[in-house]
Image (cartoon, rainbow, N blue to C red):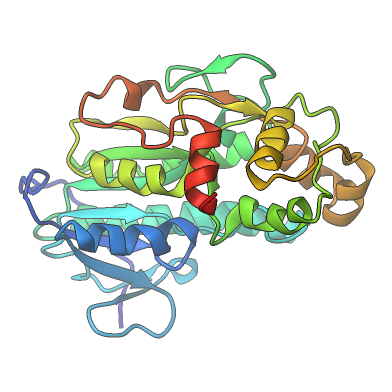
Length: 318
């Protein structure tokens, strides 16, 4: 039975440039985690899944809600990729679900950070989930990692999420905040949900279509995370492609790739009625124009899909 861990500063062993690493992953069954795990294994890394239910083999069991994890779970682990958290668009934003969205991030991140601080032999790297929602709705403003946080519910969540890594940072771990945008994959997420409508010729821009969508292909998402395991980088990193698009541009490009018309705009009242006004406004009718300044300045990383058309052709096999 695991117990909540105490903290203590220590000298961390330098595993970060080992050729083959032992990497623990939370959220391994999610859209990103389920693609990242086989990718890291293909690179020769040993992946340990940190799971809440039904651990098998080398899996580590934890309970973020209860603050429980085996005190030796991360001994000998080189790095942690922490992706766990309730889905932002999975349910209507009731007061209870908004609390779950926050606590599933802050409690899990605090627990992982404390486990890193208490482990007797590593990890010295924490790649911790975050999101571009930290910048708030900023219109046409170009946003980089140097931009200040914005305002609103999602910005508040992301700020507290990032602050929850404090124990790992205090213990000397290199911490990277993975500020993820809209991850495009044919296997799940926003793109998969849109495909049926677009394939039937019923896709259209959301409202005015002027809102920015900062996206990343699943291939570049997992490649960037793998790269950051050993990159000499800490702090915020925007995991978005170099060429964000407006919703109208996204709609036209997806229609072109699928050879389907996209002339039916979707008025705001429909999604607001279905999802609730606050959720629809935050996820569908506002956005951020985010640029990946850190990754673009890194000579060791190259985007496979820097523009939307290239990404969609690759992801959809068109």
